[in-house]
Length: 359
Ligand code: NAD
Image (tube, protein in one colour):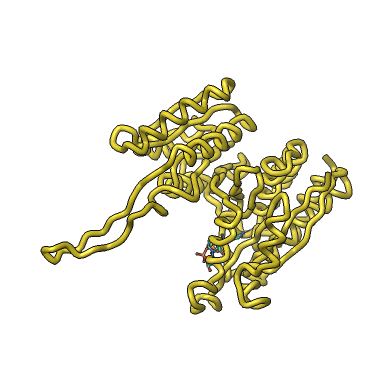
């Protein structure tokens, strides 16, 4: 069966890094025999320029008909003054909600070759490989009622609602357990069950879903302890699953452990395994067009796509091995070059493809 992929290059460095990712897809198709087909569509600011909409109807239809979406990045100063509905970031939010992408997978990987880039001691983080699974479409960011009201005495009160339904917890739990099954089969669920009733329910449901995944070792941590453990001994974790708000915070902490924003991929999945894959960084307008952006986060997003939406685990392993081999050979883009001796986006992409072709 052909795997159909929608590609949304987006804005800024988006098209530059996507070009290198497409070379990787081409190598997988032509040299490793994967049955892949792909089509590009405008998105973000490019969607506004092409069709007056950050998520043009044809682009959305293409995404919905594809097994996976590979996205570059969106946004740029030229779009900041547009009405809210036309801003590039709105396109991203609409795409996530239209495809019901409730499970956000954010790995924090630190290749041993780059251990010096972290602000933590190299021995604490070298070889780090954590996956944070964050619930993305529920919790306090969406709960009703919400607002700011004026009380009878004239004082204002701001309020939000933290709520999770059983069905929402169940589906993110399954996603987290399935992710753990793809990795080292250890899952740590992070909550605040000593204070919050929602967390009590969360914990209970994770325990009951665990019975369906007997191979996975489930543990629980309170979020305050989890944030300490992430910087104290991050390598103790394999998969960490948590709510929208806790995941928002913990995934940024985990990302910073690795020191480079240009290296980190992400995935957002729905219940059917359909997903959107993108680097965690933005469109980097400050370096767009200079040919110096690091394409590795996008190439590693391809590896995640192969593993989590296309079921091509062996090919995913090869892409990751090719990236590792390229770093081991000493090639560095400017963002990860310690001594200023940096290669271009294209040279880095070509080196990964050459390594991939030889595997
Ligand atoms: P950014 O991630 O684009 O850039 C932050 C810094 O990291 C910049 O100095 C940039 O040059 C550098 N950087 C980022 N990616 C890099 C790469 N691959 N290689 C080398 N260096 C890299 O964040 P920002 O500057 O705050 O935002 C720029 C634009 O991107 C804004 O319009 C913002 O809204 C948008 N944005 C989009 C997404 C997304 O598409 N998911 C995410 C974050 C920000």
